[in-house]
Image 1 (tube, rainbow, N blue to C red):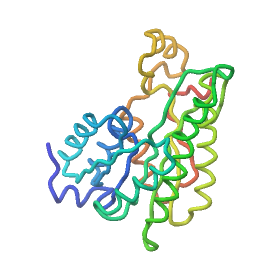
Image 2 (spheres, rainbow, N blue to C red; image 1 turned 45 degrees about the horizontal axis):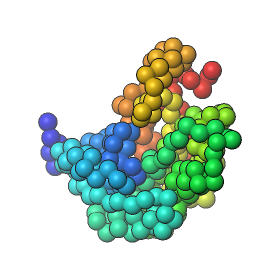
Image 3 (spheres, helix red, strand yellow; image 1 turned 60 degrees about the horizontal axis):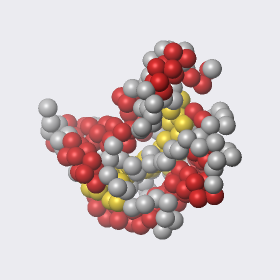
Length: 253
């Protein structure tokens, strides 16, 4: 059932404008729909997933949200500021930034070449920094804002696998802490560190079954679990510089 105007005005995020990078599909799509359901207007960033972005936008609009699309390759250092500058006039100043977009390659340390290394750092670490910087600059002085970075439990406990990706996520954890100090008190900065919520695309069939048997809760976190954690952070004005792990206990291993 679609939300009425009165429902949206009463929503916990009513009147807020959110930008979700990589918002067309997978976890980003879940964020977009949860934000729209709770009263926010949403700007969906995508790179090559235009058709999926349009479908997600239609779903979000069914909750009464105003939705717009922006596109761009986040490996280009000029794109983050451009995305924010394009997004801000659409519905008014952004007050929520979700740094969700990332690349994830299964490459070991000796197999990682400079191009692969740089691409992971550019998209997973530099882009969130530049987006956060542009976000802070456009936020009016009398407004509060939220930045939520999508991290991985590898960022808290790095290993040797997915080397360039893992190092970029370690950096993202440090960025979260640094921005939380730098942007206080007007902007809260937190992160969600995920375990195996969704298997990597093109992963072997054994990926899911092997990992499920190893994690303490013997289950995978669901997309809905991640969405609820995001909303918790956005609705609580007393949390900043924090990491919520959503991994069914995998970090305990």
